[in-house]
Image (cartoon, rainbow, N blue to C red; front, side, top):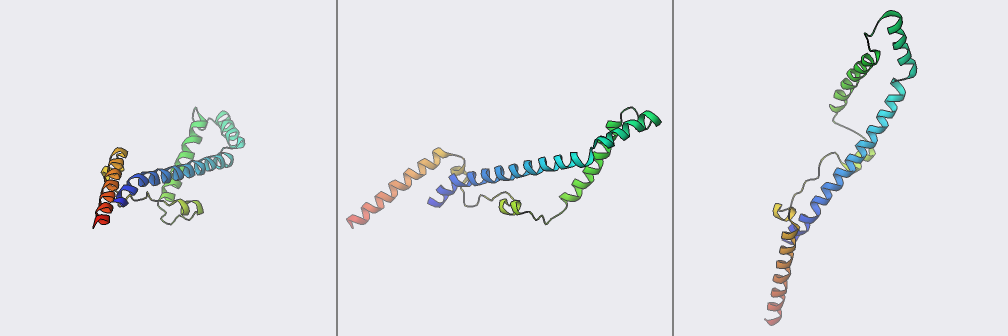
Length: 139
């Protein structure tokens, strides 16, 4: 029971720490990707060329920016689908964090969700241990 008691308090902390680490890494990686993408794809030359083509030849409809956005989103969507299909992702930080949510095995649900119940069980265990020690001393 002592194992269940310990796991009941620690397991949610392990899962929360994993969530925080994975989310922080994902946000950092996404920020770097967006910065790199913006610098590589949306150069002033591309925007100016599209705007001039619209003015000179009436291409790209009324809004060349919308056409640029749609083409970029289409290309990104294809790349994202291909990347999510990959099974073996090798990245040192992700290898340390782990890609799967930690399992909460060995945790009794009533102890995990209720700090009050954990305290009650801890008090009961302490009382039983003291009683057993007293019985052992008198035998």
